[in-house]
Length: 71
Picture 1 (cartoon, rainbow, N blue to C red):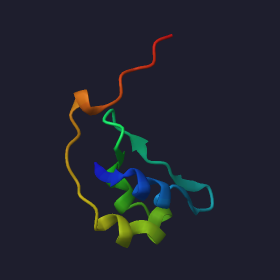
Picture 2 (picture 1 turned 90 degrees about the horizontal axis):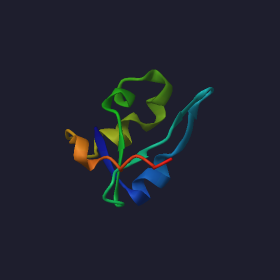
Picture 3 (picture 1 turned 60 degrees about the vertical axis):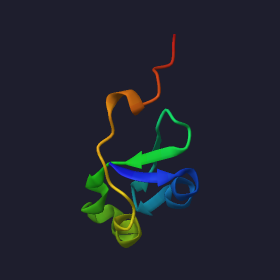
Picture 4 (picture 1 turned 135 degrees about the horizontal axis):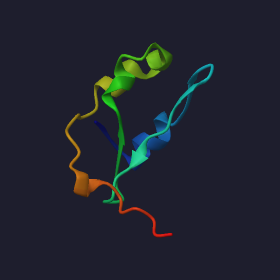
């Protein structure tokens, strides 16, 4: 996963091409956001490839995701 800060997530969130958009997902720590690495090769997000390629990438452990909302 591509790791982003909240500010980076806010900066990259939004449309990238007709019918395509980036929407980073928050992790449970409240300070980190992620995007799948697949966005780096998706032509619909080409306008963001260079910027995203400079961000850290790592595996996200299951316990890092937010707890499911109780119903």
